[in-house]
Amino acid sequence: MDAEILALEDNATWTLEHLPPGFIQSQANHSLFTLITHASITIVLVYVDDILVAGNDTSQIDVFKSILSTNFKTKDLSFLKYFLGLEVAYSQKGIFLNQRKYTLDILTDSGQLGAQTAHFPMEQNLKLTDCDGSLLTDPSAYRRLVGCLIYLTITHPDIVFAVNILSQFMHAPRDPHMQAAIRVLRYLKGSPGQGIFFSSSSNLHVTAYTDSNWANCPTTRRSTTGFFI
Image 1 (tube, one colour):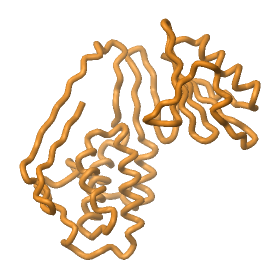
Image 2 (cartoon, helix red, strand yellow; image 1 turned 120 degrees about the horizontal axis):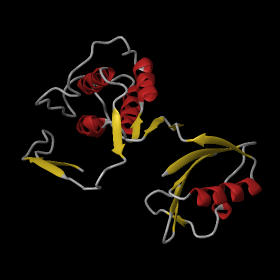
Image 3 (tube, rainbow, N blue to C red; image 1 turned 180 degrees about the vertical axis):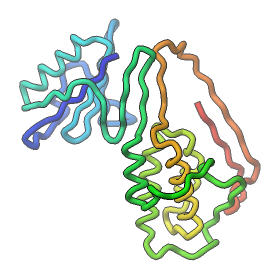
């Protein structure tokens, strides 16, 4: 499947009317559009004035680019290599996605680029609550950091559990919450280029894992269930 990046120039405004006939808007993500025929699939993802188009039929991609160029002045950035913090590398074995630059930017902004690395994103059996520790004088720093970590889970499923816990205290973050978030950064420093590899020879076999912990939440005493696919 080929993937290319297009950029609209002169602050152009893109609307649904500029799509070729046949595209269907996703109900899960209104910026995602698909065109599926009996022999091909074309996918269009729009973010402001950047457009990602991918598909298994280059002729369909060329048709889309041609129609778009009749309405806008566009810049063809060729094959997808970087998009919204996602870095893409191709080989005959498959496609590798990572967010190395995005990770290093977070470490730099948080002042943790020179910190000692951690082997795990969260201490074992750590119980964070909404009442222990002092409230942060500037909660926006914590919220911004956790927001960045949430986006990083796209290619880092290994931090999903820790980030899920941290995101539960966005309303009133405290010192222990920030220290736990900094530990996630120290863990990321050890492997900033880690990502997800999609093999070209995959058999598309789906494997699911699930686990539960009875009455694990210290605040509500409810059970916690997690899954990974």
